[in-house]
Length: 65
Length: 209
Image (cartoon, rainbow over the protein chains, first blue to last red):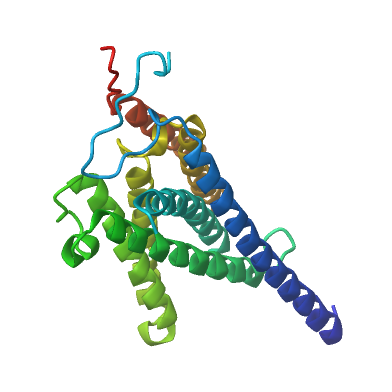
């Protein structure tokens, strides 16, 4: 590969890395929003409890079988 | 911000951060060595590794700040591992992981001053930070009873184990016994993690029982 070709290859790779990083940031933000939504609608009997508190008491009908 | 919203921030940031940390560790395993990786220059992976790490640290800060505001943690339990009054071990592992991540981030910024060998030795702590984060995230009392969260935890462990196994199996002058040992070790650790998630359940309190 010529010097010119090598520089062009390097620049293309760097641009691809930057685009992928930007995509990663976007996917992370979207993932954060989706995770927040899914955790809010999760079954309370399965969800995490705030440290220092007890798990929620659920009725026998709602408990997973 | 209400306590419910803060709790959602704690849980969501922790979950996404675990996925990001897994990506960071897997990329870190991929960038060790010299020369291109599958025709892609190695610096591309190093670039992604660094950017993903910065994102993971930003999410970690959000996770810790929201947790401190929610639980009203004092400074010492939030910074010094295993000093919390509640969930001492599992919260302590999270604090340990966060401390190690902060150490790795700072030492990476002053890498030239430390020298490559010193920086590389400290960078091994990333595996400990990731493992502490996994156990902290999959501990009793977390969202691990939600099926997709449990699957995500197992997938994160599987991805890092696979990356390490591939890395170890591609070393030169490989002996077949060593390859079998790597495969068996990977399967053993993954099975151990799944078993641990099953044998440390959070008791379900039902009003009918």
